[in-house]
Figure 1: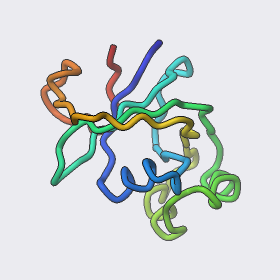
Figure 2 (figure 1 turned 90 degrees about the vertical axis):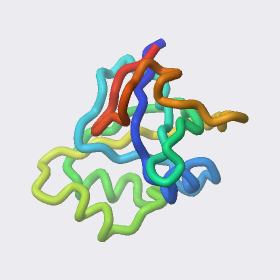
Figure 3 (figure 1 turned 60 degrees about the horizontal axis):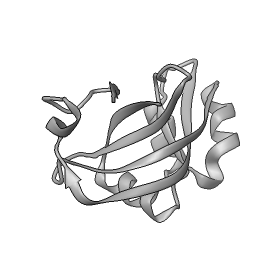
Figure 4 (figure 1 turned 180 degrees about the horizontal axis):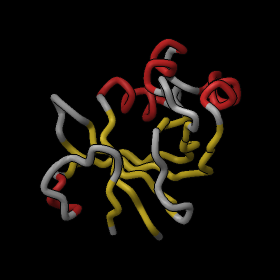
Length: 123
C-alpha cells in the first residue's frame, strides 16, 4: 500500500483529528494508488502525529470542488479561494479513518531529512 507524507499546519491537523475537516486540499495530487496520508504537523510541533485513510481523490475546478466539499471542509471560503487562486484545477483527499500516534514520530522514522513542500512518498 502506497502512502504519502504531507505537511499540515496545527489548526488543520486538530480539525482533521476531531472530524470537522474531512478534506485535505492540495494543488497537486499523488498517483491514484495512494491509500494513506501520513500527517506531519508543522511548526511548532514538527512531528509526524497521525495517519489517515484516503477514501477518494477529487479533482475539479476550484469552485466546483468548494461546492462539493464545503460542508466538511474545515476551512473558510476565503482561505480556500486564496489557496487555489489562479488555479484551473484543484484536488482534495477525502479523509476516512484517522489514527493518531500515541508517540509522535520524527521525519527520520520515514526516511526524510526535511518536511515535504507538497508531499513525499513513504513506505
